[in-house]
Length: 95
Image (tube, rainbow, N blue to C red; front, side):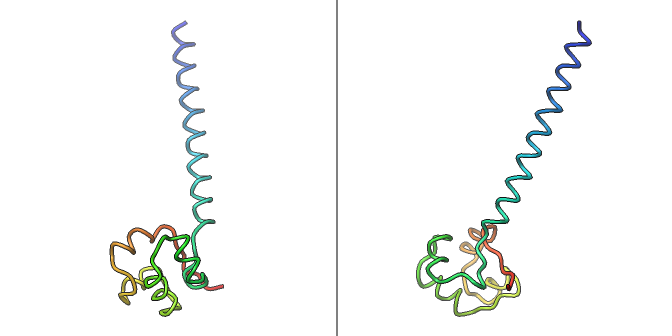
């Protein structure tokens, strides 16, 4: 009986672990799809999606193109705290 209980516990752990891994992978894929491309987005989209003010969004648009996300910080287009709050929600790929 003990062997069956141990086997049941282990198999349950494996199933739950696989389910959590699948869910995490699915979330990462969805996150990649929803990133805003800072080289293509309009000022209005930047304001709405990222929650930035008009002046910051305008500076982002004016200093395009960006060869990397970090370039926004290097060119002092946005302050560091703003960059840290949006860096995981933006992409920079040219189409």
